[in-house]
Structure formats: C-alpha cells, structure tokens
Amino acid sequence: MGSEEAGKDDASIKIKVLFFARARDLTGSTEMSLQVSPGTTALDCLNTLISRFPGLEEIRNSMILALNEEYTLESTVVKDRDELAIIPPISGG
Image (cartoon, rainbow, N blue to C red; front, side, top):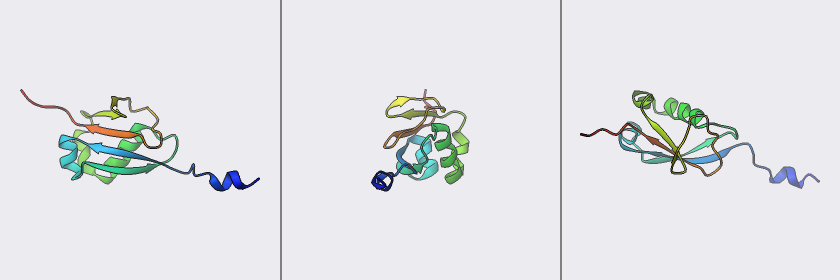
C-alpha cells in the first residue's frame, strides 16, 4: 500500500526560464532551470529570479511574461516543464 507514497515527487516542479534582450544582459544568461513548489505563480517565479538577479528590478515594471510561448498574467500558475520567458520592453524607432 505504501508504494504509491514512495513514487510521489510532488515536493517541487522544474520550469525553464528564458531571458531575452536586456533581461539576458542583466542576468548574463539566456536560460536557466528553476525549481519551484506546486502552485507557484509566474509572479512568484519572477520574485525568485529578482532575488537571484537583483538587476532585473530595473525592468520589472516594463517587462512582459510569456508562458509556453504565449503572453501570460503574473497570476498564472506554472506547471512542471513549463517555459517562462522574461521579455523586456522593445525599443527602437
């Protein structure tokens, strides 16, 4: 009966985070894995990333988040193997 318990690994999920343009410059990375708890939102992930890379605070209020290649709200709950993209403001003229 205890075999179901032994196979459970619900303690955390793993997502891939992608950094573009200025976010890539501020983190020094194009992508990374992030381990989070089930029920974690895109905003929770962003807060974790800002604590690891304080420079991201510079673009926090103007960045866009995308989850699995679609724009998403900060309140969206991430799932195992999701891909969260940090997209800074696009400049140009």
